[in-house]
Image 1: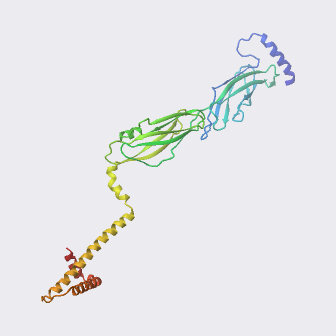
Image 2: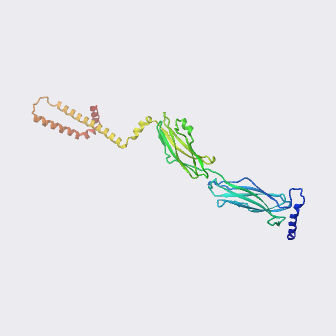
Length: 364
């Protein structure tokens, strides 16, 4: 049946253009295709997303048509296309919507774009294959754009507490990177500038820096901060550094906080001086003090011993005895012996609480 109707269909297709037609539709094959705007592909390494393109084909003929979808795409190995190879059978005036999906590798530079061409071709009418010269086609063209994203990394090598005195200046050195997929102006600023200035801090140069960096580019910069000139009590706060992308306002910032303290040297000199004394110095001072106490105790013992000797001599005879120089020397030696005997008995005397109290009374 199809073989017998095919020649008649061909003849009809050639003769029908000669017949006046009042409506827009005719027996000739006809198709249109319409696609939305150029898709944007998200290639961010943390959340890559496919891009979708919705297209609509319409059978503009008065007969049933089979429409074949094909594509030409120059995505290479970086971007793939799906859903652009199919076949639809539509009645006269009917339309069909289909979705084309593009997927891509991570970190494709935003400067890249990939052109595509979607073809809709009428291959059959009323189920009969059409020869190539009679087939009708419609084409939609466009390109896949790569969405720009920003990734910023900030690093400060020395994150220790900055200890300052009034009017001191400290230079904070840092480095930052552009890991986005396009050239980007990276801005690094002191986020809590207003709070620091309310405490009396000053930024002599600027509280921010900004550099334009290529993809994977980096920069080394610094920000100078000056402590308040008048400090009545210790200040403990922090400096909050924040790096951000100009290309991508929604990109996460990279932030680092540096502790800082400010204290006048006069308010802490006493405690500082005491804390700086070493343990060896304290031991030395203690030994000197103990030696002085021992010296005075020894003097007291000697003084008491001499008093005891003097008292014993006063109770002896008051008769004056004339002695020569030799006897006087012998008596002096005897006195020294008695003194050392008294020192030997020092431990025995200290064992008596009353004797020790008398010793202290004599010393006073």
